[in-house]
Length: 445
Ligand SMILES: [Ca+2]
Ligand SMILES: [Ca+2]
Ligand SMILES: [Ca+2]
Image (tube, rainbow, N blue to C red):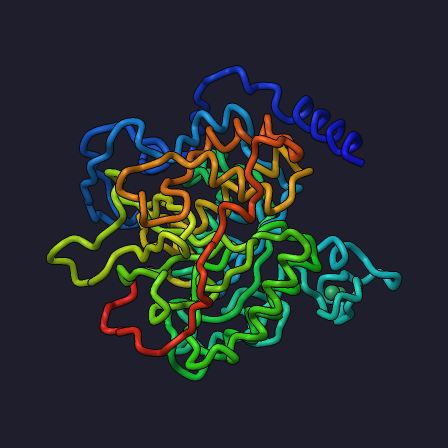
């Protein structure tokens, strides 16, 4: 079996990594790509409008070369629609002009049924997966097949912060690249499965614990319907550990299938190694979880500037936070219900999809790898930064080119490689959740 695996790996490399020796940049034609300075840092002060639809100048100081290193990674791969990534978030604008081409469509719920009706809307669970007419994913918060909240649950506007949290993550992972519109996602092509579990960032309120149940159902759905990674830029904070047992079971199910769960460290400038700061899913110890911190433009751990109306900065943890990524991304947004727009965003919620997007890009060149192996590649190829030493497990931030280079030469049986389990969470004590965290900080999503 080992010989078969080795031959399969060699074939994958030959087919998907032909440009490995060519160290060139690929620059997409998307009009706002010059504003994506964490994707490609030109160096020096960069001034542009924070929002695409009105004059809102912001000036950021980029350091040439301190970026995601994605333009040279695109010389190897710009993604593949055969890679399915699930997003757990609030409502999703799958019709956005720069996202519509990269939305997953359930093959079992598209086309015509035996009576000539569209499977998308025939009221039948055509693929017998337990969900009727689930074309793009599912809305677990309202038990309807459409993850766009304005279709079925607009009257719940007061409970749902529609689009503002989900849309940026979608664009970072998979805004269509080089199409002359908007921005370029990490994956120019990918399939994003949309699983709506309610508003993110709020830990209290009537829907807080409901999100545990909805997220657990969504994770099972993602695993059973072909997702290789799950992006959850959110958290829940239970009063008791047993309140998240159903979520832990679902993540264990994903782990048993080699599916990654990539989640945020949070934005309260807290050490997640301390039991009193536990948050979930970040504080579960499953090997398939990647917890992501936010790094600032200068390579330091992000701290909210003095004088800001927000307080806080990226959470961290030498044993509980795995890796860091830039979060100040210029990405997709939706305004006035159905208008496609773009903006500059930040917070660990937007560092998380950088890692998810990069995992998908790795699978585009190495579909034979498991989630654990992709995590191993991300951790080992991270660019080590002094500011992250002792603050994260890897001590570094993701580097797209280095990750793809390592992916292309990765051999699962390489004896020189540590096993994924060796470099993951090694906390000797199981953290116990409390509700003692101060929530006086305004969440920065
Ligand atoms: Ca179905
Ligand atoms: Ca159907
Ligand atoms: Ca685009």
